[in-house]
Length: 188
Length: 188
Image (cartoon, rainbow over all chains, first blue to last red; front, side):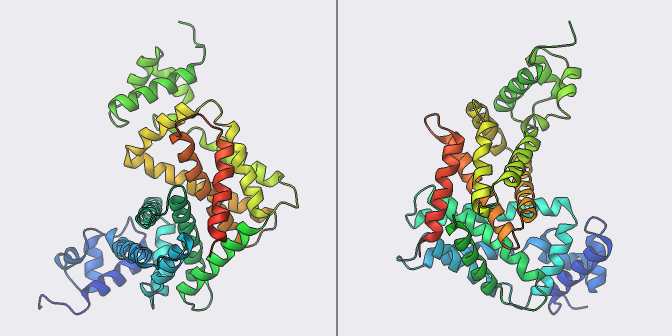
């Protein structure tokens, strides 16, 4: 068996999600994932630090993409517009991965420890966005409020996107959710 | 020693916060808390299930108060107004407890496990508020969006309230933060 395996990462991820769904996250072992993928445990650890990272390895890319888009927003963009554009840009990360995201979410929803990890991820995203807004000269509490509201929009939009009966574009659902938040907060 | 101790709960809470601050949460034992409070471990367990509950026992009251206020908001209140009024009402729970809340937050900020617990608490609050809005006939995604935005406002307001150099009213800071969110989302 050659050391290089075509799309080993994708096969491991697919096998892991299958097993987490069939047996539960806690009952799944790295050995079981490697076996299902037709690869070795050694190969698994070349890609993932542990079985939890299979579900969270995309966090770095998400964080990087969102903060970069906030940094690169035109000077004229309001804080909420900069955040909105950055969150819409996440659509590219999830393109063609809706079914994967849906299954991943079901695994997370079934496990308290994974839910905590997901909450921490979103809290970190809010902190990173607020800091990036601060670098744009947005003061407090505007930076934190905008970042937290942005995460609120993203959570709701992501949930709608994976639950929708037909395929849709995450960017579009984020845009709609942000518009809805605007309408909701404008009402008196 | 008589079984009844005047203000045992308050003394235990005070002693616990002192020790968590001095030694760190992980290094503090129930025995140490009881000793500092001049009470027995047995008395401690009459009030708290474990040392973590000293920091989180107020969650039930917070949840109850917020959902009750959403339920009791006038029919004419918009979702965001119902949530805003409910969050302002939490001011009564924290009256005279700003110094306590400030020290509690410092303990939580220094401990990853406690931060997770706090995030779960706020996520549960959002779920409870969204459900209560649903009972008022608010549809989705409006209910979830309003609830998540409300929690965003509450987080930022609470942080401002405990960090402020002079004493202020939590209800007032919640109201200001909500107004600021309105202004931020209204901008284009």
